[in-house]
Length: 256
Image (cartoon, rainbow, N blue to C red; front, side, top):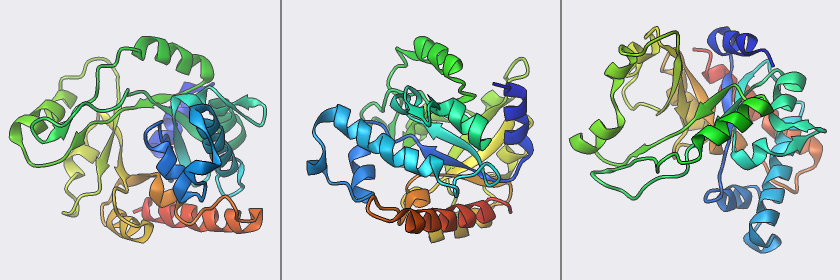
């Protein structure tokens, strides 16, 4: 795996990041949206089998291409599985030219001071070793701000930390689409920031694309909005056409 080529693509190419990292808690909802009800599988093993079938169908679709998709975020269970006889991460890079990332947080702590911090990362070292072996380029983790509480937000956000970084490290920031256009311009221009990417939140794909297009230099990292309209019972032709339209619209919104 050529990390330098992956870095160059993430820094210079047009496109967006596909978030395919629904974990155990959010997987039932993702399957339901895909048209697979909870009574169609039993237990976690079958649930993860079904969601990997969904993700494999997405990743192997001709619409899911490296010309418009820069990277894809994977869940640990997905990283450990194969697509077309290769580890998922290697399939993405070697067959699609898509840079693989891994969700590494272990979920969120209960709300305190208007935020939900990450639970302690007790498994990080071993998980990173496995990610490197699997061909993963980068990681993703997240906390959540629920309301405007100065103490809570201070526990999550310290943008001055970008100026204190040592060595040659770069970071990517995944943030909620701003309600004020250009709100993240200063962060986007920071030399330590490789990319600022947007989650679609509660917006429909059309709404998210409209907001994204108004924030120059920001690209999408959509999950639900990317998969909107895809169902398990679609023919391959309908599935690929629907996914292609989704990918096309998000890629266009990410170019501005």
